[in-house]
Each structure stands twice: as structure tokens, then as C-alpha cells.
Image (tube, rainbow, N blue to C red; front, side):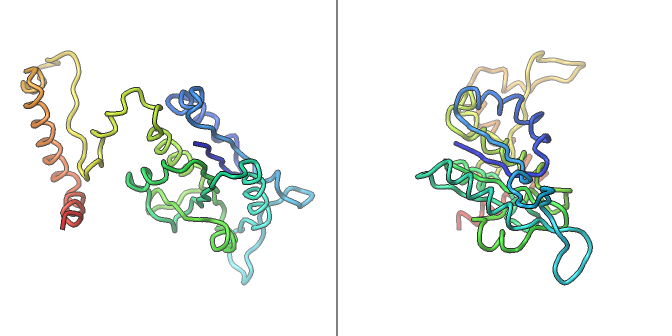
Length: 233
């Protein structure tokens, strides 16, 4: 997978993309990530990328010109590759695990980080293939959502995680939250690990984990069980 990120704050990404699993994925050659400074694509002599909105109003709006130019340049570097352009903005589809799994099948993603009071509507209408939001709240820009999306996608790329089967037991798989996890010691300050997990009986352990997942989901996210029921019907 190749991911290109267009932003006016490229330095924000190095601390995140250069650590942990995302760094290992790049070192393994499983993922290729490129950061592009939007100002490099501006035709303005001062490298300006925003302007006042037509019709008046507060704040500034990102120009269409540098964004179109950036996307066109990136696509020219991967000729023959099908690219999906994603705009990170509050109006997009909320990022859920099923959305991440769908996007993880893509070979090339171009992420556009919105900023200021908005982005020229022509980017949304004629350039972006889809819009993604990470929740119903407002952030300064699309940089943090882009990092969240990248982290979410990279771990789904085959060969990135050491144990591929672990993906099948994570929260939100099957619309259930993950079961409780324990590690050594078996007893800590009087708090003990459930006996079933120490039994060595794998069938009983699997049954316990399934029951605990359902119980936890009922307590914390009953809406997920409704979604599961709706899918069955």
C-alpha cells in the first residue's frame, strides 16, 4: 500500500509515522508513506494556499489550485495505479472498523488534510472520491485525523502484524467489544485472574471470551448489538 498525505503542516507527521508499528511496516516494505507540503504546489509567489471566502464570513478557505495540482502530481508518479482521494473533514463518513477494512484493500490512497474554516467546494465535488471524519467534533485541521486513519489502515495490511489471527479478536469485530485480557502474575494485590483462563481448556476459554465480549458490549455499547441484529435480519 502507498499512502500520500497532503498537508500544510508536514512536520506534524514525523513523530507518529516514524515510530512503532507504522515505522516497522515501512521498514518491511509493506507500506510506503509520503508527506507533501501543500505550499510547494502553490503558484502564488508567497506560497499562499488560502484566501477569504466569497460571500463574506470569518476565517480563511483553502484554495483549490494547489490541492488539484498536488493530487495530479502524485497521480503522475503512480501511473497505472488506481488512486483513491480522501478528504479528511467533519462532514465525512465516520471512520469505523468496516470502513477501515474496505479502505485497507486499496493499493494507493491520497489523503487531503483540510484546515482553516474549510476547503474550496470544488475539491470536494470534483477531486475527492470520498470524505472521512473521525468523529462529531471539530479539530484545527485534518492532520490528526489523517494520522488516525493511517494507523488504523496500516495494521490491516497483510504481513504488518506478527499474528494475523489477532485481528479476528479485536474490538468491533463482529460488532462486539473485545473480551478482558490478563497476564502474569495470576494474583496481584488480591485481584485474581479468572480460573477458566488458567485451566488450559481451550474450548472453555473460547466460550468464556465470547460470553465476556457479549456481556461487555451490552454494558458499554448496546448499540453495537442492535447493529448486529439488524445485519442478521
